[in-house]
Structure formats: structure tokens, C-alpha cells
View 1: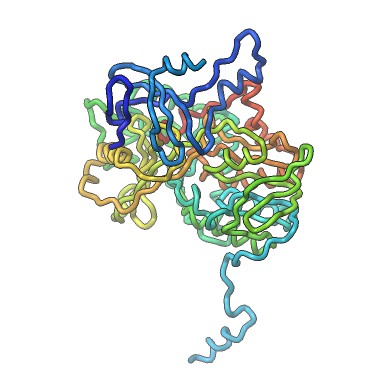
View 2: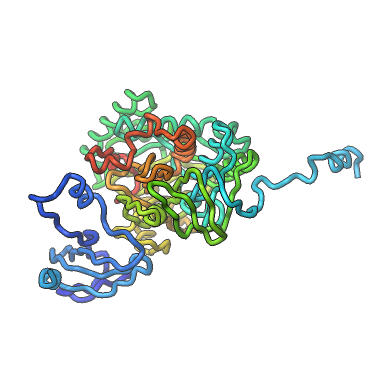
Amino acid sequence: MKLLTCPMNGPRNIDEFQSFGPVRARPDPNATADRDWSRHLFRAENRKGVVVEWWRHVPSNYFFLAERDLVSNEIIRTFDASELRDRA
Amino acid sequence: MPLRLLKYGLSRDYPVSGDIPATPELKPAYDVVIIGGGGHGLSCAHHLAKYHGIKSVAVLEKGYLAGGNTARNTTTIRSNYITPEGIAFYKEGVELFERLSQELDFNVMFSQRGQLTLAHTEATMRSFHMRAEMGKHMGTRTEVVDQKGVEELCPLINMDYGGPLEILGGLWHADGGTARHDAVAWGYAAQASRRGAEIHQRTEVQGFEIVGDRVQVVKTNRGRIACGQVLIATGGMNYDVALMAGVELPIRCYPLQAMVTQPLKPWLHTLVSSVSLHTYLVQSSRGEVVIGGGSDPYQLYSTRSTLDMKEHLAEGAVHLFPFLQGVRLLRQWAGITDMTPDYSPIMGASPLTNLWLDCGWGTWGFKATPVAGKRMAQTIADGRVPDILKPFALERFETFRLLNEMGATAASH
């Protein structure tokens, strides 16, 4: 059983979580060409390395972020989405 | 020793050479460099040599021949997709498989036993009607069967009448089948190398030298190669290899896990697949039951196996065939699948004029080994994408002309 440490619920079986994929910057809807919209919709981070991605703890419907290594599958850290907002 | 044997021993054909020659020295230049020594790349090399007279070809393989997804897939061959473009392409693929052992002078153990996909909900039955009508329209053998039809095609199945996973009917695809995956790759490799193509194992591509809009040099761990044309056909590594050339593909990589049971007497005479259970089964000619195919629920580049996925596949398999409960698992494995947003492959041109793509094969690539190789060879030889491949172009994502095959893809996603 692989554990994922939820910032709200603590360490839980990763089966309780749903991955929502890598974080991507939201384009400005008033200043984005079709080509860039396509890029936003269809291309996600897939390099061998660490990604920051959205996860949801399904029973509590709590969304948060995790840094995870796409090669070793090590979950480096998890944090609340407010941290991302504060950074931006 | 009988004299007759001695006569054979003294003939020029003795000793018989191996089917696939050892890796030769790298030459400084080739007309075509194929990156990836799996089924697709080897099929392309064969078609280039046999049908287009292009023999200055190097197939570069980082590991050993056909050791990636060619070795790890679950050998389903079918054309019961949902878009006309998809069906037309995969139909040609099935037809090439029907003649493949003769084409390659190599037994690929093709067995056209039909594929039965099961529906447990009315919504699935509706989608089956659509797939069946599309399939008939495109000239494939695809039809909807009711409960009685399922029982006739697969008498040992648990129909679960009145239960939560009652089987309501199925999609019967008489063109469906299976073949020996390794033999397909070996047959192509043998034919391609006999006609002059070189297969370089343990030869890893480490980068490209790009001048203007052309790849001039492919850099490998064994030296630099000047190239006329380049094809990327590296399965789970397609994103990585394309990125070295500055091409960012709309691909996300997920492991796909599968497993086989101990050999059993022949009892499963069709391919069986359940959309709701995310499980499919096929009995190999050795008698092992191959059970697939669980995609991991998040992106990863690791081919580890997990107990979670084994439990999930076992649950589906035992639900359909309860007598499998006491059967032992023999092997388990995973492959890295390069998933596209619309569950269709990316074939054809790249932003570089001499770099061609045979990518985005996700969980559905084995069945297309002959046809993708044939059509990519034609593309490279002509310098132009044939009509049958045009819908699969990389630009379709920019023009929002997607080819959605998600519902016709068997593995769980």
C-alpha cells in the first residue's frame, strides 16, 4: 500500500486520492491565440523529473498539491493550494 | 553418419545463419535512421527495404530488440474503433496481420478467433450499436449480440443474471485476433536485415544536431550519424526523444500493467473484454491466460508492478470466470504507455522537415505494427503523408480536429 500524506487528513492509502495532473498556468482568455489554447488544453508536463500536480482526497473532496518524482514515484511533499496562490 | 546428412553439411547454406545478425559497426551516415527497435520501427525498416528499395537504414535500439512495449503488450488485434478514420486505418492493420506469416516467411502465430466486448449497462449497449454500425459501414465484421449470443460465443462466462454486473450483451468482432508479439518483431527484423537494413542494439540516442528545420546528425552513445530522414518510434520514450529535437508532443506517460496465469487446457476461444470491469482476457497458444490491462491512475515512468493493480485485474477476471479463483499467476509486468488526449496515435510530419513521428501509441500500438510500419515507410520514401495517415497529424490538436477513440479503447483510464 502506497501512502500519500494529505495536508488535511494526514497519511492515507493512495487509493483514496484522485490525480488531476500537473499544474498548468491559466491563460488570459482575452489575450490567448487558438494555438496557445490548444497547448494549454492538450500539453501537460511529462518530463522525467519532479512535477507539481493537483490531487483530491475523494472522501473529503479536498483538493491540494503534491510534488512527485515521475521516475521514482517518490512523493516529495504535499501542501495546501493557498501556498500556490500566495506564491503567485 | 548417413551420407545424405553429410551432403547437407557440406552445402554452401551450412551452417545456417541466425535470423537476426549481431550489431554491426555504425556507419557515418544513413539515408534513414529509425529510432526504436520495436515492432513499429522494424516494420518500417522492412517496408522501406522491400517496397521502396531504401536499404541504407539504421534501426537504433537503446536496449535489446523488441524489449519495450512490443514485449509488454497483450497482443490484441482488432479494428472495432468508432471514428471512420480510425477504423479505416486499423482495418488495413488487421488485413496485413492476416497475411503476415507469409509476408515475413516467419510464423507469427496469428489466430483470428474474434473479440467479444461485454456490456453491463444500457449506455455501453448504445455505444456498441454505434460502433457496430460504424464498423459495418467501413466494411469490418462487427455486430451487437444479445445475452444468448454472448453465451453461445463464450459458454463458460458468468452472466451474473440479475446481479450488479449482469451482462446485457456484447460487441462481437469476428475480425479480432491475437498473434505472438515477439515473433512479429523478429520476423520484421529478419526480413529487414536480410535486405540490408542494420539493427543496432544497445545504441542510445542522446541528442540531435539541428540546422534550420532539419535534423543533420543523430548523436548516440556509439557515435554521430548523419541522416537523411529520421523516424521516432520509441513507444513510452517518444515524449523524451521528441523533446531532444525540440518537439513537445501532447503526451502523458502512464504505466500499463498486465499478468498471465499458469498454462491451462484450451478453454477460452475468443478474446474477452469488459468495459465496466476494465479487464480483458486472452488465452495464449501455450495455454496461459493473459489478463490486462490496468493503466495506473497517475503519470509515471516506472515499470514496477503493484499489488493494487493485480488485485483489480484478478477481481475482474474471477468475476467473469469464477473457476479461475484457484489458478496461479505466473508473471506480471508493466510497460510505459504514451497516452494522447484523444486516444489516437500521432503519425506523420513534425515541425522539422526530415523528422517523422510514429508516436502516441498508448495502450493500442501492437495491432498497428504492420500498418504503421507500412504507411510510415511510404511517408518517408515519398516525403509526403498519405491520405490514410492525414487525420493522425500532430497539428490536429492545434486545429481542434481530435479523433476521439477513448470509448473504443479497452484498457482502464
